[in-house]
Amino acid sequence: MRVVIVEDDALVAKYLKYVLDQDERYDHVVVTESGDEVLALARDPATVAVIVDVSLRSTQLDGRYIDGLKLTRAIKTDPATAHLPVIVATAHAMAGDRERFLRESGADGFLRKPITDPADVRSLIAELVGGRSD
Image (cartoon, rainbow, N blue to C red; front, side, top):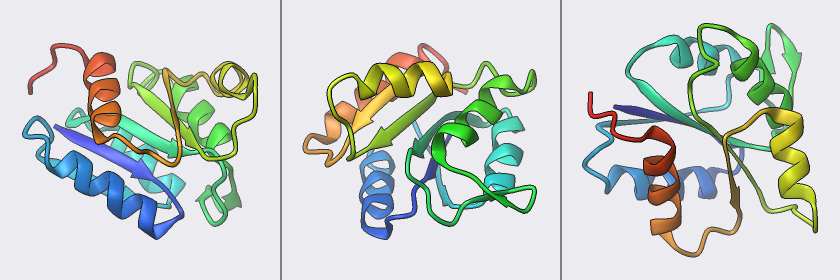
């Protein structure tokens, strides 16, 4: 099972990849900033979840810069990928932002950065993926 991480901070991306590589359920963790690659991977049945940073700086989709909320909406509004659990992540969350980000993006989950407990990441993904074991 594959998890895709869309994160423009190299340290955060490396940490999330490390956390998920430690979980035997996920045999492939991909880090990318390409919106086009994310959508292609999202269409692949091996992908079981996507983590998207809200404040992407250099991610493009179809040649246009896109933030994490718009990228998540693109995943969630495509009939081929709408079923895929998407988690938005941000360090810039004030009161009410969690609910607003989830509502505006259509995401299934929310992670607040910095992530201090790796179990939070693994348990959120496990909860959203459910019993899928392929």
